[in-house]
Image (tube, rainbow, N blue to C red; front, side, top):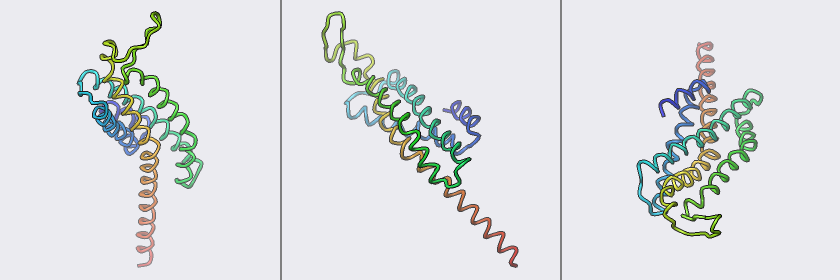
Length: 182
């Protein structure tokens, strides 16, 4: 996470945006833990941990795309709310496509379905699926949770930052006007 933070800080040149991306990664582990409880699986350090690392890559990618688009639109659009709404409209499809294709691709492993194309048979709970079940469960549930975070919480956090910036500007203007008046 530390190395990711340094890279994000170099890319965004913003402490807030870097923390926001890493916060999404940390919060997505909540989805992993919920998934482990729902699927009644144990937490494996190796396979679940590897799933969390893979999940972090997808979550970081989705958040970088969203925040970078917002930063570019903010340069041309003066209203932060309008920039956030346009960012959501422009990035909804790429974020959802990334998430949905990953989730659908891993769903057979989560459910323990093994398809043998040569013998033309489908088995449930085959021994080969047991190895990858925890990894795929952590990615599927973590990504489902992180997609909601990316599409709802990240824009809200960007609006929060814009509101704080606006409040500080108004406060500094009031302070300047009071000094001039006295």
